[in-house]
Length: 155
Image 1 (cartoon, rainbow, N blue to C red):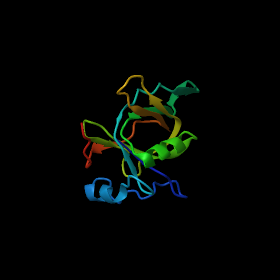
Image 2: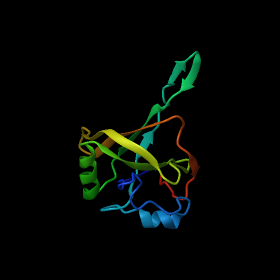
Image 3: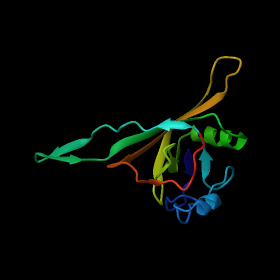
Image 4: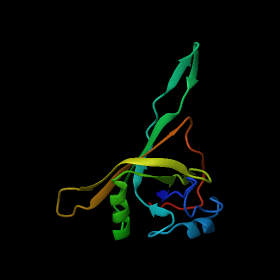
């Protein structure tokens, strides 16, 4: 599951939970339409980031790595489809994600991401469904922080 938020003038998430460890705060922050944090169920992966170092005076110094999360969903409504279509123009915002292992990544403030790719895909066949595939990209020296999630991801 991914949780996405627009940003305010300071770059912070709009309607972020006051305490990201409390389920009640998430319940107040999440809105599946309009303003608020959008919750999207699907599946994704976070490939390992390439090692990135520079040498200065013979000393190897790690620099920020480009990290990405590939995500695909077939569960959406008309409002979400409109949101995905706006993401096709390039979208930047705040993201948290929850794994099936019940870990919430992003900490209190979330992960500042941009979306270079968001496309719908209609598979072949009589019983095909539309999927939206997207890529979230962020730069950091280390992986985002994780905690046991106060939110539940359905199977």
